[in-house]
Amino acid sequence: MKVLKMNRAQKTAWFIVINFSVAIIVSLTAYLILFPKFGASRAVPLALSFLGLCGFSGFAPIIFKKDPGHVVCDERDIMINRRAAIAGFGSAFLFVGLACMLPFTLMGSEANISVNWLPGIFCGAGIISSYMHAITILVMYGKGDDSHE
Amino acid sequence: MNRTQKSAWYGILLSVLLSSLFLMDAFESRIGIITTHVIGYLVLLPLLIIPVYILQKKKTEPDFDERDKSIVTKGVIISFCMLAAVVLLGYLAAFLEIWKINVPAVSKMPDSSYILSIIFIFSLSVSVLVQYGKGGQSYD
Image (cartoon, rainbow over all chains, first blue to last red; front, top):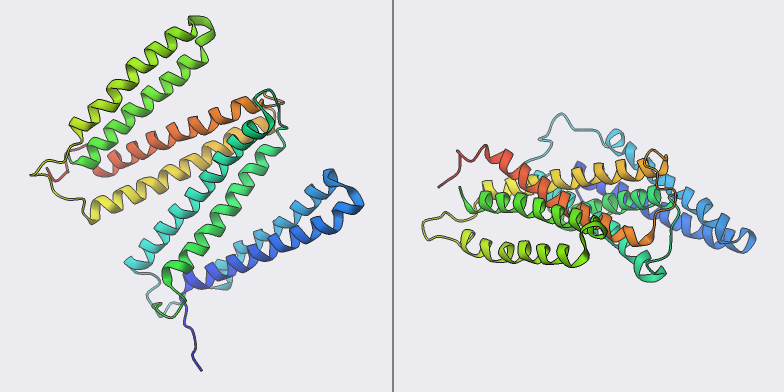
């Protein structure tokens, strides 16, 4: 049986991808259940609150502790992490750009939006950044069979 | 100075000029729309021509090596962190009513992405120049 060996960065990335995917699926499911009962005005904030599950990703460094017997990361790992960070931040910036441009295009120049959307845009950008960071790490390492562990 | 450093200095110049254009646009009602646009084009046209001569690669100039790549990569990450901090502070200030825009007009939203782009160019240029030192440690 082939056993996939993964390093700490890959394990953390998988944890984040699974955690975020679960949070997004739960959030969408909650919206589909709550929308017929409460309408969009109450269903949207309630469904979005399930995205708080993404916060569990913060436990990844505690779950996947550094192995004192091995080299933690080499030049290649640092390079991959930096490129992944750029990909994550780039996607987040694209999201913020779209969030700025789309209301203007769809609603017209005379419309106004609530300030309540602004922290939402920032949280969305944060989620997209972390998600893309983790996905890029996994893509750049390949399918997990050419890691350093 | 190598090409990356020259590009960084050009980035600073570009961000300063773009922000001045934005400020001129903001005050266009006072000084007249035609005046601001004429001044704007007079500024932008040289901006498009100058870098063609300054940033041309010379034969004696070394290629873009690993150190340059690492400096630019770190600069991009620093600039994105700077953007995240600016967006967070701006949005929080609006949300907590420290910055009094209770109902932000949709027409002002594209301006914020324009300002963010200027901040990105400026912080990238500054971080690249800081990492190289003050220009004395280049390969030229």
